[in-house]
Structure formats: C-alpha cells, structure tokens
Length: 171
Image (spheres, rainbow, N blue to C red):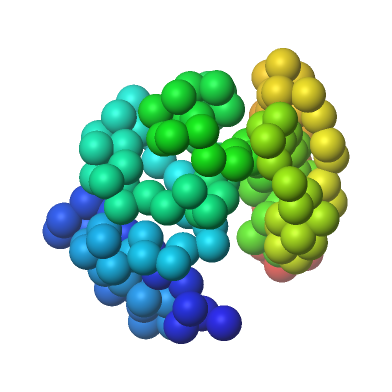
C-alpha cells in the first residue's frame, strides 16, 4: 500500500511532495520515524552520497531491517561494513521498470535468509536474473546500456520518418 511506504531525501527536495501527490507515499525527513520497524530500506542514492546517508540512518537502523541497494558501484561488502552487517541485496533494474518489464540483476549477501519474499516484491516490475555480484558490470551493459542505445537508434529512425513526411504518430 502506498501509505505504508515512506520516502526521504535531502531537505528542500521538491520531489518529496510530488511523490506524495502522485504516488500516495509518505514523505518525511525524520530518520528515526522512517526506520522504526522498517522491514526494508532502499538505497537509491548516488554512490558518492552514500556516506552522508549512512550517517543519517545508522543510529536508527534495526538488525532485522533488510537493505536494498540500487546504487551503482557500491558493493554488498561496503554496505554491510558501514551498516552493521544487515542482510543486503543489490538490484540493478533498467528503464523498462517503468512499464513493469525490467530485467533486474539481483545479488544477495551471504547472510540473506528470505530471498523468495524479496524476489516476489521486485518481480512486480520485471524479470529477475540472479547473478554473482562480480557480474554487475555485465548485467548493466546487457540490460541497461544496451537497451538505452537501441532506444536512441529507434528515436533517430522515427525522426527520419518524420523528415520523410510521416506524422509523428505514424513514425
């Protein structure tokens, strides 16, 4: 349920209210409230901002909370070392997640216990491919950069059809 999903960002982020209005989620900057009894915490930040996020959440993070990372280049080992060794999963979804057809690269920490539940959650926006964490660069190239390149080619093809006299809808 959207009202059971809490989101946060940096103070003054205009997207927090937008997420509330468009998605029905609950925005908050109160880290203690956000993390109290949290089943999952999703890290969707730039890797260079992770240390500042760690400072915010570490005092309130419970041992039972599962950490989900969609940060590029930040390893499970790094996340666990900075955040008390909690169960951790790295996910690399792609653009197609917007239309529930992503291909998600998924790697679990060794101490992860309930993989089926997590996989069920992320299957809602695509297909899961279980990989070794060392394969993240390859899955990103195959499912992220590759489709983005093909979309770009398709856009240029459609533009050429418009230049030939077709309408945008026809192209």
